[in-house]
Image (cartoon, rainbow, N blue to C red; front, side, top):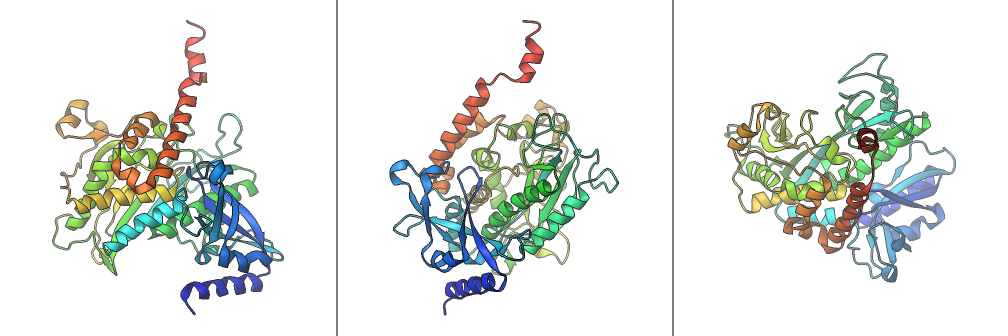
Length: 445
């Protein structure tokens, strides 16, 4: 019996043994919002073999009306029982690949974009691993001005940190769904939290990141609070990032490691970082895709805006965590600008594509910047050749629009749908009259 058939049999047996009645089929739209519809267990065998058809025209960035029929094909390797599911007539979930009626992959499916990009890496002999650090906030509700739950700070463990119990429940739920967790702690800003997922291959991690976001929100809702991955919800406080650790492996060997190099970085690792730095302006509209994302990407709040790399320096865009003897496999780069409100399938795709472009063209890595860039003046940054990320979503989208790399990675369908969506978002923001403007100008002009 081939592996896929074995997995189907495993899913059917597990559903039967655990009294599962409903299976929630999950997939993601272009902007990274999780979509779902449920089937009963009686439909499961047919769904695993033939998929389930639905109208894609109702999903943002999917199909046009005249080509609306698509098929959700469950991936049996992603079958997991939801931890809050009842013991009787329980609920499980599976992620789906979206197919055309003829069985070909649907070009508007972000999961397919990532699979395509991973295939390019695999053809070169690489497996792409990522470990994201997703930060978020707990607030009393999603209405009006955000009300914080605590005034705790980084790593605080005091009665101020009322989120600790919520984090613990979240970690237990994640682990119940087979998602490994490395750390959980209070972050720098009031009411801000972080749970770091144990690294995995990029496709598994993109599925895990989507699951993580829904679990964080589910646990919060069950405890009458609200969790948000909005990048910058509080003025004057640090925003929420998704620092993403990345590495390429060839079999069991870390392709980024070189025992003889000053930084313990191989040429491949250096080329990969150089690719990230060279193309970061083109991909930032994907990794930081909301108007609010750029309220976080400003100097002074630990958010990296300066295009440079270093080992110890956390004011750079790319950091290479220090090498530990005997830990060669942990050699990696940390890309620090993404935020947790991105579409992880597209974000991991463009990160990998940028790095592979550096390897393919043997980009030369500039010298690391180990001094605090936040404290440099404009003249000093110019002398050091340090450029900055785009200032706002509009700038980022305009740069992305001219990027051959991003267009090839996303494919024409998603590339255009994404840009169209972002231009509409920017136009709504640009024409909106904010409270700041009314407070500042109404009484004096």
